[in-house]
Amino acid sequence: MQYFQNWQSVLISSGSAVAAILIGLLVHYILFALGQRLARRKRHAVVVSFVKWARRPVRFILPLIAVSIVLPLLSFPSKSVRITEHAIGLVLIACFAWFLTEMLKVFEDVVDAKYNAKISTDVNARRVTTQVSVLRRVVAVLIAILAIAAMLVTFPSIWNIGAGLFASAGVAGLVIGMAAKPTLSSLLAGIQVALTQPISLEDVVIVNGEWGRIEEIGVTYVVVRIWDLRRMVVPLTYFIENPFQNWTYQTADILGTVFLYTDFTVPVDEVREELHRLLKTTELWDGKVWGLQVTDYKNNVVELRALMSSSDSGKSFDCRCYIRENLIKFLQDKHPQSLPKTRAELHPTALHANGNSSVDTVENTAAIAGKSHS
Image 1 (tube, rainbow, N blue to C red):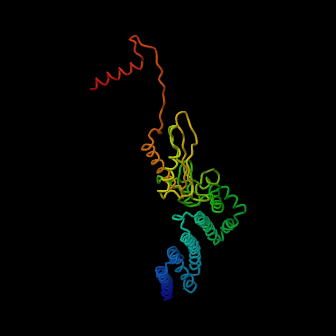
Image 2: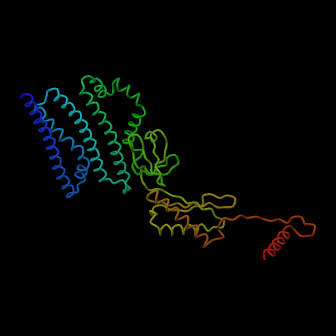
Image 3: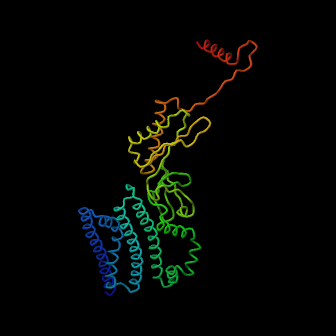
């Protein structure tokens, strides 16, 4: 009879634990159903992002909290209760760390909603979003380290390991730092990039001779989207230790040049007027800077440099192509004599045995060749 009563109490306790889990899930469903309805109605960035990212971790947190509340009231053996409480505590630490990491994404979404770097040409907007993105990844790593340390501290036998992780500036931290030097250097580089801002999301850069845009800044790497849609993955430390070109560091506008090589007879003033007329007919030019100058001359050509400004590097490339094509067409149609040509002066040579010059011989040969073809 006592055996049956023990099993009966165990079944009641188990049913109570299951009921607590179901109540936690029900509370989760009600809360996020209301939150989702509110997000659809208000379309507020914070509410929408919170419902999106907090749903999954809270689905575990609420049932675990409910079980931890009712567990001391249940008729389980004391040893089983201690083990269960310890396990629930470990899972709760992991879930809360997960929840905090997802809250960082909520903050990032709110910033992105205010500063949309992908459609804005504002450099400050790109810097803010870059700083938030990099710091989110760094803080997420720190949260994971602290969560692991907190979980280790709950084990009395290995409490010192957890304490060593907390005291990262101590001897244990130095040993781990030496072992994970590349990872830590990348992590520190990420913090430095977030604070000093040598690069931002959607910045136009030249890396290893490749033109591209900064697509993603991770904790240890940067993804550069090349103009032909290739992706170059570069270590984050590269942008701290090596020189590179950033075409949008201060502003996105840029000057473009087109070089033309023409004959010495080219009418420079007319070409300059045609350049200005072409620029006024295209939206690729921002209307700020333009000019045409003779910048050099060589043995048989004159170098003309056309200068124009655009609001960003993509428009600058298209504008340069447009000007180059149309100036060449202008010279072909209006001043074909100004196209590059090679001049040669022929001098009489010694007469052949038949009394004809070498020039006459060439002409006679051409006439005979013409007759043979006809």
